Amino acid sequence: MLIRELTNNVQINIQEGGYINNTKDAIETLGRLRGKGKQLERGQQEYEGNLPNEYVNDVWDVYTWIESKLGGSPEATDPKLKSIMSDVFALRGEAKKMERIYKPDLQQSDEHMGAATFGNMVVNTLYPLMQWLDMNEKKFESIANEAATAGATSAGNIASVANPKQAYGHRKRDKNGIPKAPQKKNPDGTAKSALDISDNLMGGKTIKR
Image 1: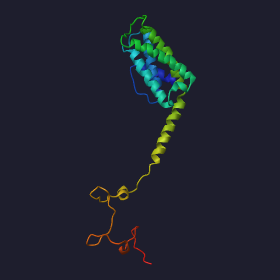
Image 2: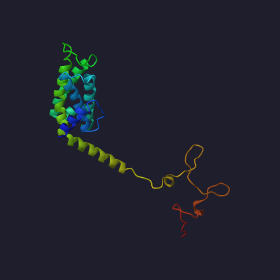
Image 3: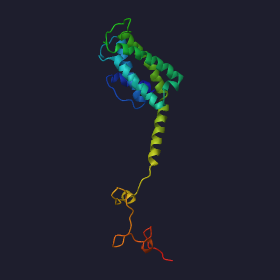
Image 4: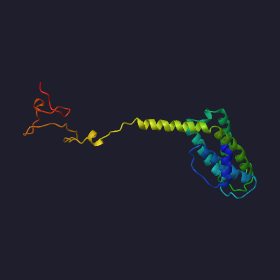
């Protein structure tokens, strides 16, 4: 499955980040957080970043991406997702308490859960969301395809002008800036009578009856 492949890639490139453009990006983002959480729960100090701060920001990025794709609030579309996101955001609230005082060996207190417990919670809380994204990958793909098709149709509906210069032309304007209609004139500057003009409106010769 996609989620297994991406989790393995995350373990190799745990320090890398990126923008969320599709389901794969969202799962990779969550997988990176889980990888760092596993290091903390095991007491490994290889990762020296601020995991609570990263959790606050990355989880929000994933949430807003889901929301933008599904339209409106994603919790309203799927009861299972609503339950998952409730847990994810509850942990985000805990992360906010810790992000300013965080260090890898932060111990649990009455105000916060501590680094190791937080790492364990990240691992357990994000996995259901990764599974949900993996199971609904086709839904996001179909939404993306529909949006692309709609965009192509809109672009195709815009009429093109074969000869823009000839079509729009450049007419002289009067002193007020208003375009002046082309009109044939007599030598003294007065307008010629329509009955005296040999050409018709279509550019051909006038037919006399």
